[in-house]
Image 1 (cartoon, rainbow, N blue to C red):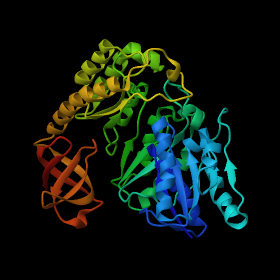
Image 2: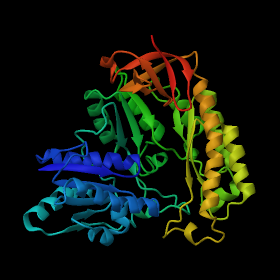
Image 3: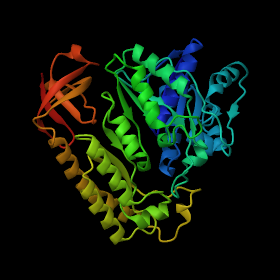
Image 4: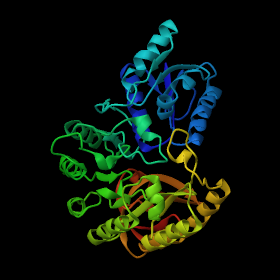
Length: 435
């Protein structure tokens, strides 16, 4: 039987999907990764907003257009938060939460044999060990998302994820290194360490934290050109000790996605974020002290409950001050079950969208300035794809700073790291010559 998938949400979900598909593959199922018709579809869902939940439900409708008789397996955050709602959706045979994916193949086979629906959702109210499932093949051809951590203990006032994912837990160090060596042996050129809150890696382990783990991964891949990149980071992880440690590692990618959410301290307090704008800025200064041109990217929510024009103006000025390479901007969306949903002074959606546009104009300028700073420099680029742009074929890929670069060259260079001298820059790309 053929197994397909559709994944929504974060990079951790992408890894979880790979682990589920690998479980099916090890039992002899054929994996379909290009959204072709399949007999079984794994829908890995998101619940970060009400919109994400709606898209998760719509995902089932999309795959049923490919095969109206398909068996549907629903997992992920939506399945965890609203399991019975998921169970009642069309053709759904199995519902597994965020810590029960190891049971998915077994439950699917039980449904195939007996037509007994499977529901396996463990309540996430206690600490749990990391659910460690082997991954034998990945969806991406050049870089791999490696989940090292799950869960979150922060309970930001707008976020449902601690309830959907449970408390923070870490993948054992020896298992991380085992999988890192496997990934390197398969020819992948980049490993992205991801999770729900990777800054908390090691808090449930002895004698290991995120900086030490990165160092161990670098040592484990010695003699290769495998890059090490980080997923989204809590800005509090950026300390002098952390930065001095990782800056010594030659294959560590200086791209730091530091989640901000607001440049106003009063908004940050209402969000229950546990840092100030000043502390965030100090962390950015540290990164720029130890790295020559680090990429600083972030997330910002506009129109959070109670956000005034003055508070939003603080965010605008902060964005200009930091000079972000990229800002992912989200107009606030009320999420039932969170503290923020009950807050007074809810901001009209139209205001949140207008603020999104204003902030986007700022980030368009700071992003262009950042990319332009590479003109005249020689950068290393991991070639990932060949694209036709303005009737010309280009090899395209990313620098360690995650700048998207295009250059003319031979397609045989795909999945290799080449040196490119940057000649010019656009709004979201740089262009140069392979040297």
